Length: 152
Image (cartoon, rainbow, N blue to C red):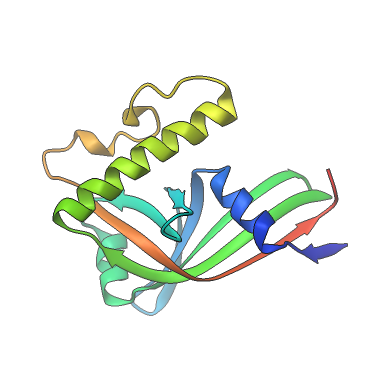
């Protein structure tokens, strides 16, 4: 039976992962793409970054977005969280501060999941090697819902 995931379970799933699917509107159509993220529980937001392109331009125009994260063991045992929120582009010292939080947070999650070491941010993304600085953004969480099926 599919049941609602308590908010504590939703937050735990977000914190235990670093890859999710970002939903946004591009023109008249919805788009969903995978992103690397960090859930900043203290500031109640999702942190990520990208270079200017389709995704950033679309979120600037339509800042209402969603993020879906799941953990699927098999068809009878899974959990899924859906976040609704608002895209906010960061600049200057705020961008640097949140990019540092993102980097350290994702390294921590990788180390916990793989019992290994994420040596550099390039272990999970090659985007920071470009000449232009990335666009750092947050998703201010406005709603969180979750579902699960099966117990561990």
